Image (cartoon, rainbow, N blue to C red; front, side, top):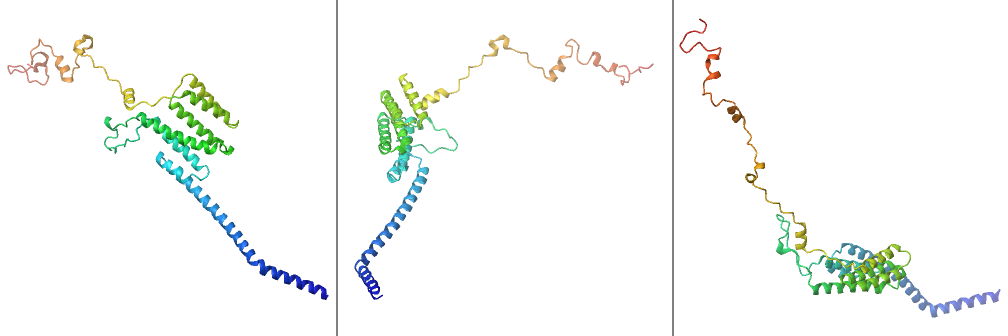
Amino acid sequence: MHTSQMTESTVNLELVEALKKHGPNVLVVLALLLLGVRGWIWWQETRTERIGQAWVEWGQTDSYGSMAGFVNQYEEVGSVSDMASLSAASLRLYEVYLDVSPTWVPPVPDPDDPLPPEDEVAPPMTPEERSEALDDIEVQYRMVLDRTQDDPGKELLTAKAMFGLATVAEMRQDNDGATAIYNQIQETLSDNYPDLKTLCQTRIDSLERGGQWTPLPTAAELAAATAPPVPEPADDPAEDPEEVTEPVETGQDAEAGTQDPETPEGTGDETGADDPGDGGNDDGTGGGG
């Protein structure tokens, strides 16, 4: 009994000594663990909030300049920056396809005349502006390709970037370069996207037949193509006897035309002798005898 009490007392003393010696360190470690967990939770909440904010702002961005700024602002936010880069490149590509100079400022529309005058039609891109725009588009697509080509979960984003590079090559009239990219897409894509592989083969066949990118018509070409035909001048009826028609008689003309031209006015059947209400002959004698 005495021995057991001594052993228990010894254990208690050793525990107290251990707590005195290592207790502060243990508390510091526990505090650090607690702070780490709390920090990790805060980081996850902040990251989720930033991703949500990025998606909202991406949906509200509709121009190339603002989209390019959005990409730089949210470059680290998952796939949002990749999709924004694809959107920015598509917007820029559409500007090149429309062939409108980026320096042109649209005039303020006149509510009374919605059609702008001919001198205010958007000028086309210069060769330098078009080349610079295609270079910017290629940079955007290659950025997405470099970030996604080694990630199996971003296969579709990789394919979209490669399709964009092929389109740029076509707009540069580089059919061989575009064909090589389409072949690379077919080799890169898995069997999960058979339609995209078929699309690649369709473009390859078209390029082999000499198909090239066709720009949109200019404003002058479009106006000439859609102008209404000019009506031919009508022939003069006096020069064509067959076109001459009789004048239509009015009511008074028709009534006047029934009178015999050889009968003097006021004679014949129109005299009062035939009128039963007349008093008699011109000499004043009665008609009844």
